[in-house]
Image: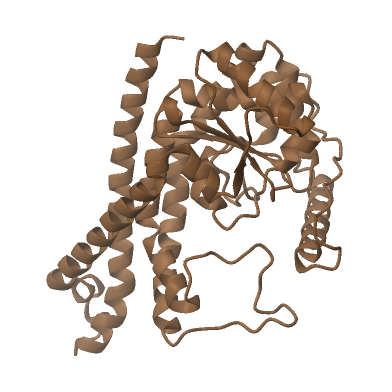
Amino acid sequence: MDFFDQETHAQRRTRLLLCLFGLAVLAFLVLTYLILAIPILFFSKTSTPFTGVFQWIWDPRLACRVALVTLFSITLGCLYKLRLLAGGGAAVAELLGGRLIENNPANADEKRLRDVVEEMAVASGLSVPAVYVLDNERGINAFAAGRTREEVAIGVTFGALKLLDRDEVQGIVAHEFSHVLNGDMQLNMRLMVLAHGLCWPTIVGRVLVRGTTRAPEIGESIFDEGTSPVFLPTAPLGVLFLTIGSISAPLVRLLKSLICREREWLADAAAVQFTRNPAGIADALKKIGGLYKQGRLDTPFAETASHLYFVNSACDPWLNFLSTHPPLAKRILAIDPAFDGQYSHIQSLPRPADDFSQEAKYDRLYEETLRREREEAKERGELE
């Protein structure tokens, strides 16, 4: 692998990222202005919008104020995330609920994972990174994060640790090492910083509505039995910020997709090159397809690092072009042309909590809904 060629390519992608981020900021400014200007001008102007929509809605002074406040907030959001990620890959792993594995773990599964990481470090010519396990995640997923090659962290979900065999674990770990070698990791960290700058209205909205920056937990609902939601007096203003934040969400998704999606194909190919075993990564992808939970993460911060993972961390969006990863079936076919598109069912890992917990009820509902949707899609002939 030509290091200088990869470095040049990484620099081109960084420039592309900055250009796309600039366009996303411009679109965000325009849409934010429209959301704020309509109610402000409606109550402040004597004329009606029917006299001329474009002339009525355009106010240069208001536009300058909105632009300055928005750009200042985006800058603060980026600087805050930059400081938060100063710890490199370890900071990302801990944010997602990761637990550091020691050099000689007593647990057999963790020992196997550690050995695989060390083998892939030798195969790729890199130093052995810190290894984390996401104990609360029963889906199959993994990630690599870090600002430099010296502070890389490899994270693997508990589901991947328990449901994959050694060759399959080796396949997904090799995929993550490819991202490190190709310079994707540094770019992905920059993307996390820039994306956070665009997502600030959502964070402010949560604080104003619920008094916390934490996103709602999976399955958490105001309609749950025994739930007494607390809404602050600032909730109406918070709803406005959440509305503005809903603009940035698809922009961030699109930005991640345009920057990261193509690199997944290269990482899959490099994983085969490192391991000399195409079946390893292909079988891992097949198991993910056969698991109802697939690669979904339950942590409220999953979306923050969605572009870092081995597979999508949430259900495939309605609009596939917003997905951060290519479809599973297409990735498998690129490695195993004989794949028939059928996934063998993989039994989900039981929750540590009792079966009557709200989380367990949500999981059963999620799996039943997904099973029904797949059966209906198969009847319509929509499944690949």
